[in-house]
Structure formats: C-alpha cells, structure tokens
Length: 419
Image 1 (cartoon, rainbow, N blue to C red):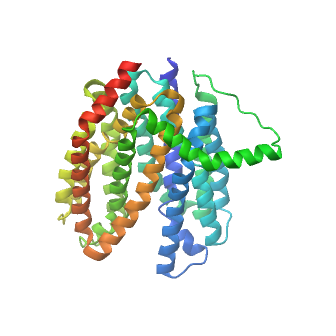
Image 2 (image 1 turned 90 degrees about the vertical axis):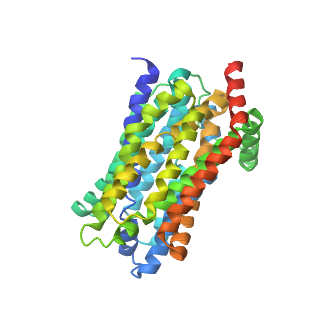
Image 3 (image 1 turned 30 degrees about the vertical axis):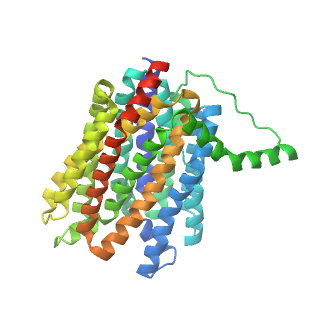
C-alpha cells in the first residue's frame, strides 16, 4: 500500500477517536460545573461559557507556534506531543473539585491542541497533488463522524459510568489516536531531529525572545509567499462563525416548536443529520475539486448553503428542519476541504505546518465569535433572525470571493506553474 494511503487510513481512525473524545465531554460540561459546586443556573451557564470559550482562545493564540515547530521537526512529532498532552489533561479533568481547576485545565487543553491540524497538514503534504482534495475530504469525514458520535457516546457514558469516569474514557480515546500516529504514520520528508537538551541562560533568553517574535515572523513569511492566503484564513473564520452561531441554539429552537417529549433526542438527530450529510459529501466534493477546481466548489456550496438557511428560520416541523439540515450538511462537505486544498496549493511544503496552524487559529476565533454572535442575536431579536443573519453572512462571503476570484485563480495558477 502506498505510504500516503496508509497515512490517510491511520489518521482517519485517529481523527475519529480524537474528535469523538473531544465532543464526548461537551454535552455534560454544564452539568459537571454544577457537580463542582455551582448550583445557580445562571452562574453555571456563565462558567460553562467561559470553560467552553477559553479552549478556543488558547488554540488561537498558540497554534502558530506549534505550526512552526511542526515545520521544523515534523507533523508526526507534533501529533504525538499533542496526543500525550491532551490525554493527561483530560484524565486530570476527572480528578478535580472546583470550577476554577476545570477552567485552568481547559486552558491547558487548548495549549496542547494540534493533533487534527497537524494531521491535515501531513496529509496535504504527503498526498499527490491530484489526490489532495479527495484525501482531505476523506479525512474530514473521520473528524465529522467523531463529532457525530461523540456526544451520543458521552451522554451514554455519563449515564452508565458517571461524568467523572467519562473523562477517563475520553483520555483512552485520545491515547488510541496517539498510538495510531506513533506506530501507523510515516513521513517521507526529512525533518530536523528533536533533542532534549539542557538550556543555558542565554538560550532561555533567546527562546523567550523568539516566542515573542515568532507569530509576527511566521505570518510575514506566509503573506510574503502568497497574500491570497489571508483570504483563505478569512473564509475559514467566516465559516466557523456561521457554524457556531447556530449550533448552541438548535435545542432551544426545537423546544420552541412545542415538542412535548424527547426534545434532546430530536435535537440530537437534527445535529446528526447535518453531520451525516457532510460525511457523505466531503470525499465526493474533494474529488470534484481536484477535477474542476476547489474555488468553484467552494463558491457553489456557499451559495447553496445561503439559500438553505432562509427557510430554516420559519419551520415549525422538526422533521422538516432535520431534512433541510441534512441538505445543508451535504453542502458543508465542500467548504473546509476546498480551503485546505487551496492552502496546500498556495504555499510551499516547508511552511505548510504554520499555514494550517494559522488556519486553525482562524477557526477557533470563529468558534468563539460565532457562539457570542448567535447568543446575543437570539436573546435580543429571536432565533429566526440568527438564521437570516447567517444566510446573509454566507451571501456576503460568496460575493467577496467572487470579487476576489481572478486574484485567487491567478495565485493558484502561478503556484502550479512554479512547481
């Protein structure tokens, strides 16, 4: 079996376990906060929001640094570093006794992140150019499948073994992903070998100075190579903002439809329908992008999603909402793989770890911004306005890329000719 295919299969399974582990603990985080002593509902909601958000903030801050490390020492090493760190942090979450401890651990969790980002960078680099779109689309199905099944597994484990023990199971999932990366993934490119050494005082001073300057230097190098990459980062930010604006309020929207029983189950099915659509379509859209151009696929999917969001604002039947969310999920499968494939085309391999790390930072900032935006709009103007707002955001995003179409195509063509 070709090395890139073996890597893809191993990292598909690894990403499934990793994202399933991440999403397993999300459904009962507010309940866990209450178990830690915050019994007032409003205070528990506030603590839950901070605990959820701090992770994404830390990812956005440190991802460029880890990206630079992965460019120097290899993506595999970065995945192993991340996996070991995340496993330890998750297990510690099951041993704490105060919400402050949980908040601090979630911050460390964000600092240790990087498994999924490095796996995307590794697949983008190791895969032949004519297969990149399909490979990244396939890899995304592993992530989405984990996101789809993770909350269900987390809810079941919380009932069967308790919330604290669920953290230990989550740690096991991430450890499995780490072992798959350690023993199943092979990099064909050569990287500098990482060595532990005793740092002198001068070296420590230089390291601190490098850390302060690292983000500025890395971003300058990336933009200098191809200014168009900033458009891709902005696209990732807008897409993740749109996702997170809707996700936290789906359950409330279902409840507003006067459903008497099994609201949580129906809301879970609506989440699952969207994820299922993405799982089915991502490899197909990736293959189409390899053939007809990833920018064309991105534009088409953005336009379709903007149209699909409009009717969702005035639906009173949860099953109809589930159907439309499924079609929305089908279109979502053409977004992230298209951006990842274009980033791979635009940038040389020696800085692609940093490129995907900055893209992960854009995604994390979008997650935080989207959750805040959706909550503020829903509380002040109502849930339907959130759907209209997101539809408008997708239209603006579509028009922005249309205006930049020639610039992006020119940059993509130039990098292909240079290779």
